[in-house]
Image 1: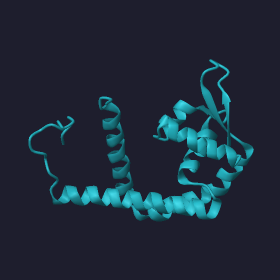
Image 2 (image 1 turned 45 degrees about the horizontal axis):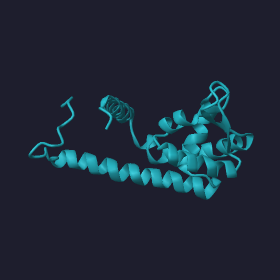
Image 3 (image 1 turned 60 degrees about the vertical axis):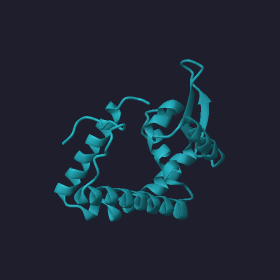
Amino acid sequence: MATEIADETAASPHWLDAAEMRAWRGFIEGSQRLMEVLNRELQSRHQISLADYRILVILSESPDGSVRMSELADGILSSRSRLTHQVRRMETDDLVTRSTCVEDGRGVLALITPHGRSKLAEAAPTHLNGVRNYLIDLLDAKELDAVGTVFEKVDAALDARPEV
């Protein structure tokens, strides 16, 4: 297993063999389809997107229901401008509000509203059932452990990469 990041300027790329390609394509196709199905189920049944759901979860897990917008962007792996647009739309739907951070006066906080908490509680069973039906319940204990291990490694490698 290589622990170094491959040099992108190398003369010849290290092509994927059949097993590596099967794993890569399986991940790409399966994860994209899974996210699309989870998103579609939330939208059709609760009129929120998977991205909205993720924001509501992060806010609901905060002790006071609020998170700085910059931290929220990092938490959902989104650009700040994209998050601002999404939170503005969520404000229109009364799922969140924004306010100035009292601590420094410069930061902006996103705060889950009572309606946002209610919408999250309503949508959570749908999301959980989808996650169980399309991923968790398809795997045995060893496979679940392997998935957790793999993505912890991926996350750690991405955290360690130099910023570009």
